[in-house]
Length: 196
Ligand code: CO
Image (cartoon, rainbow, N blue to C red; front, side, top):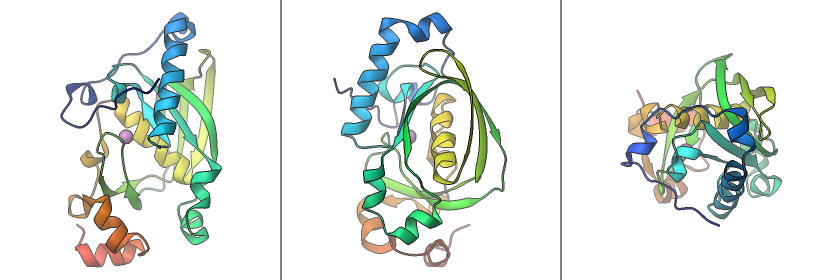
């Protein structure tokens, strides 16, 4: 089943989500929710989806960066972003540790801000302590684009969206991004839009 994705302006995207207990994670309801979120994310398509985006204030998010998404990008862009395929997985009650270096800058989007994008600085490397889909403890060490996805999704669980972190002068429609900025180096974007 596909769930409607909440757009900015819905309070649920701005609240802090609550933690889940292990029994709750293993419950039929939560397992069903994970499956519905997975279908919703694939359908969108997106590389991450947090429970608040489907209207639920729970500290649960799913991530998957499929090989086919990378195939459509120029190899240089994939390399620059340090983007690699990431298999489907669930993170619950995550604790994020930023491990720097800071300020890796790329355009980023969100399914809750459909049709828009902006340059968002993120740290390159992170550590995440969380529970998996079975409630088992897990430590994730990630860098590059995967680290960005983790920071973005964990922000959602705290009521934060990328517009809180973006260079506001870089905010634009995805249409204009495709038209003017898609193939530009971030340095050219900085100059062209006079960021900061
Ligand atoms: Co998002």
